[in-house]
Image (tube, rainbow, N blue to C red; front, side):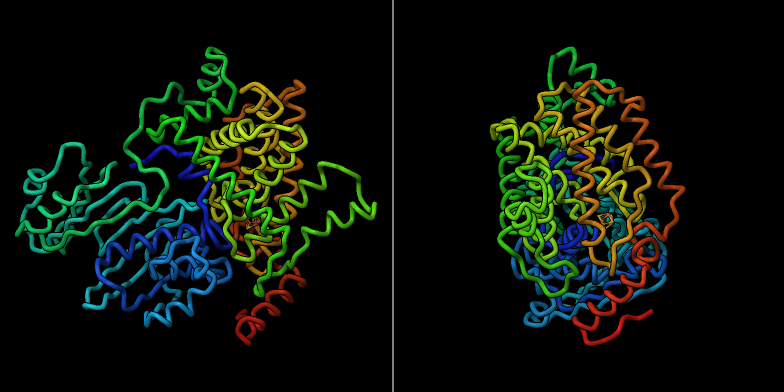
Amino acid sequence: MKRLPGIFNDVIGPVMRGPSSSHTAASWRIARICLDILNEPLKKAVIDFSTDGAWAPNYREQGVVMGINGGLLGLEITDSRMKNTEVRAEEMGIAITYEINSFPTNHINTVRLSLEGINGKKVQIVAASLGGGAFEIQKIDGFNVNICGDFFEILILNKINKPILDEVKTILPQNILLFQSCNENGELINLKSSKDISVEIIKLLKTAPVFDEVIVVNPVLPIVSGNEIEMPFTTIQSLLKYSEKENLDLGEIGLIYEKCQSGLSEYELINKMKNTVGIIEKSIKTGLKGTKYEDRILHQQSHLVGRAEKTRKILQNSIVNKIVANITAIMEAKSAMEVIVANPTAGASGAVGGVLKAVAEDLNSTSDELIKAYFAAGIVGAYFAKKPGFSAEEHGCQVECGAASGMAAAGISQLFGGTATQAVNATSMAIQNMIGLVCDPVADRVEVPCLGKNVSAAMNALSSATMACSGFDVVIPLDQVFQTVSLVSKQMPTCVKCTGKGGLAITKAAFDLKEKLTINRSGQSPKS
Ligand code: SF4
């Protein structure tokens, strides 16, 4: 079941700790759902990554262990104990081990979790991370499922081959979606609801003698699906036609999009965005104040810009200085495992927040104008999320910093007072300059060249918004730019798609750094 990307579910968020949204946030979400599926307290877990997958070479460094451990231990992803989940697991007496094995997969970021509970229940789950924190639980003990964390769900298991569908239907209200999967072990029925399933219905299901097991799975995404209302536009062209007809800017269009997608009121959505922007701005303050974290490449540098400005070594009172300092602060907060907002991903979390704050301050924009700019950034991000999506393992950095640059360009154009067409053109221009950008993180840390790419994404966004709002010709419309990103990613070799096997990741300096960090962390040299 394909759902429409949402601004809060897929673009501006998740709110998280950890280096990477596809590695840390998605794996945390997967593990939280798996803990519900186990349906009893966890005793031990074996986590497998496919030998041929993108996670095998760098799952620990990029935060998968942090995410999976945290989810399996029942921690919130913003909990400060996420910084040290291995110690927490030991304290709780839960054994979580990691292996690399061969098993069938249909996505490059696939993980298999074999869990055992304290009462001896065992379950095996296969899931994939789809980029930017999105994920899909694909199999539970061989049964096909499609759980993406956006519904209240119930799983009904019937191990002996007796038909249970009719029995389930008699208990359920009509607005609950129902999916059935059968294999040689019996039958699994998956119920999906847009509303919390009542205690009475759960009790009826649990006491029905024909069901072997009834499992409640809670949503992990901020917006629950199934409450959508009809959208007045679909494609980017129809969106622009609608904006002209109704005389709406892109921020207003973004708010309408999210209202239709979520079923929430404007008031609720504006408050949610205010809260999210508050978290982004707090991460800038945290970074500028100074962060400490041993296992990282870059230590605090965000304060150096202010120092250089005071001693007249760089431009005076320039927006460039503010942009560089803000982005560096967010990236430092991220690398120190402080709370940040993936925007649209954790690796690219600096660009949009850093540049929108600097531009809004320069223009003396009101807080409401800044919120609108985030909705403008969010809607172009939602169209990006539809296709190609934000998975660097599939498409490289063109879908992380490239997407962030396009989103920031839309947000800046909104702050400039540009039309929806100008904001969409600014996005197109910005992404045109980022096509083919490789993903080659040094020493498997999401720091270098990620910081520089975030800064150039923001500068590129500012110049693209300036060009678009001055009336420059976009030449290639945004939908064709999205298609080009997908096409180019097919032509890019795997070694430059977040595998640590190409680009700057294989320079001598990168190997030296990797060795140094590995020795610091474990006292052992890295395996070749
Ligand atoms: S290079 Fe880009 S895509 Fe790769 S980890 Fe860094 S920010 Fe993410």
